[in-house]
Length: 418
Ligand code: CTP
Image (cartoon, rainbow, N blue to C red; front, side):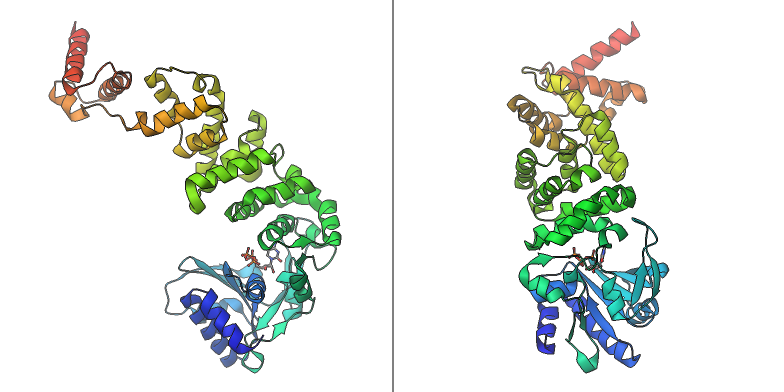
């Protein structure tokens, strides 16, 4: 790749601040007589002329010190990983990673690697796929030069995804999900050898633990059509070893697509989580939470989803008292209700949830706590109880005006005093 082409890629495909930092990094590396490279996804995307999601640099020097020099005087949030000789910076939402060129040895399947010194060739060898194991030099003497010791370019041209060596998935079983994800995103075929290795090693996926598996699954959920990746996971058997009980089929494809119609591309990932859990039984749903450890909010939504599933016989009824419907649905987070709506194939359930969202949830009594106090009620928990009674009566159409509500509370006050 010539320097001109590289410069125009960096300018057109990266946020201006990242482009500026990469050019500054090249100058800084030259002044320190270190070799600096673009690596990984950025190189792949550069060769495919696609917009990268983040920027990875490798330097043959102490990357943490280098990154700190580069970012001196800026206020970007940085994270240091001393074990991996890595500095990660958040540049207005875009991730810039600078790493010391290194080699890696995996002590056991699923364990994090042990890091040793290495040159760019060794650094590229520790990577997942040939298409991600290329570098572009940013050094002044050979800027733009492609470093491709494992022939990633051929795979890229052939639309093929292959690992660098047969132990790749054993070293890091999370790469199995990465294979499915890149295959879908780039429209690449997983090579026959790599597919055979993937199937041989997929049983190791549970070894990576909940947090790393969740990271991979959430990367999948960020893709344009995650359902296609889950279909590949189903077809290969990967899903079974990752999310036991979850099924990827026509139903899931339809529901994911429907969810995106409602939410657009900014769909909250919790909706996908709920749809993945929709057809699980109680135990499987609990195992999904333990298996992914998805944090408090998503865990809460998944719990709400189960609660709705348990209340399905009620939600399927016609002519439910509005206050009764309200009591069932108000306890859940909105995303759980919304996912339940999407997952349901029963028009009555959908009608009931829509009634809640569009009408019932907006109804409030005319009277507020202050009005009740002005009417002589003592401040305290009783006020809350009366406001709820007013709400339920209003929902059921038994109180319509402010005057009705005042009448009701006065009668209630009189009853309490007698
Ligand atoms: N990598 C790897 N094995 C992993 C994770 C990452 O070998 N389990 C390497 C790959 O070379 C990858 C690079 O680290 O290209 C950066 O990782 P990441 O940012 O996750 O991937 P990208 O290739 O940048 O892809 P994306 O576009 O999804 O960000």
